[in-house]
Length: 115
Image (tube, rainbow, N blue to C red; front, side, top):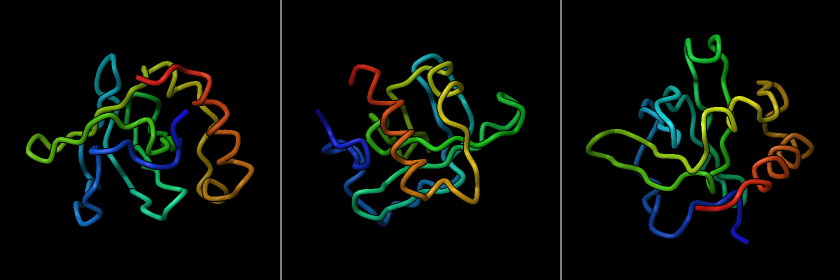
């Protein structure tokens, strides 16, 4: 099992690369753009603004769901479908950094096979 809260080897080894604003691609199409990126060891994640796709909501994606970052295309590629992301625990700007929310999110995404 991989660490859900760390990037996979070779995906994002350069913490100086700012991925805020990059487009985000699920396995079945575009879902929005990176609104925020957390780089703390053990809790790395991205917050994706889905814009009109899910009525302007935001979603937290653990770093382990990211399979590739392309700096030239300015895109982040995920190992999850749109429906998997849409059905994840809901983002709350006041609690998304708290342990219980992260535990629920980790439990949710760990149900899906790794790619």
